[in-house]
Each structure stands twice: as structure tokens, then as C-alpha cells.
Length: 82
Image (cartoon, rainbow, N blue to C red; front, side, top):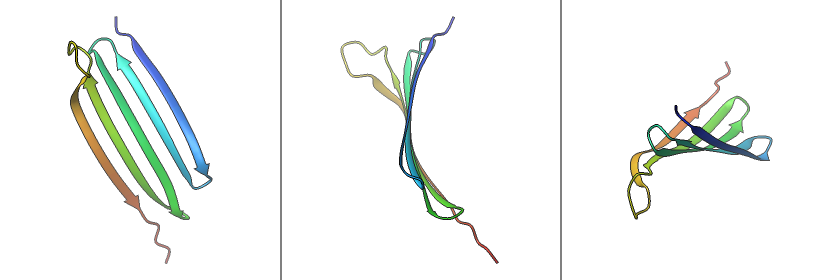
């Protein structure tokens, strides 16, 4: 049996920009994972995404959970009209 606890939140700053966060705990792997994402539509049909992912092991005794995986991703798409 695996227990998966999840918390998610989304904040819309403007109609063209939002920030979202997802945090999960997996009892099978004893890991806490987080995902933070910023989406900005800087022109109609063109977007910038900044994504930060992190996973930590919670079985480390007497210390802050140890990092297992970390990533920062940048994605830009641009709409070209002819």
C-alpha cells in the first residue's frame, strides 16, 4: 500500500501570468517532491515557462531531508504569423 499526499495551489497574478505549486509525499519511496511553475504569456500565443522540480529523501535521520533530484527548466514558445 502506498500513501500519496498531495497539496496544490495556483495564483493568477494577471490574465497573462500565473504561478502554481505542487507538493507530494510518497510513503513507498519516503520522498517529498515539489514542482513550482511560472507561466507568462508575453504576447498572444507566445509563452515563457519557468519550472523548478525537486525531490527529497525523508529517511535521513536528524537532518533536513536530503536532495535526490533537482531541475530548473526554461521553455519559451513564440507564435509566428505570416
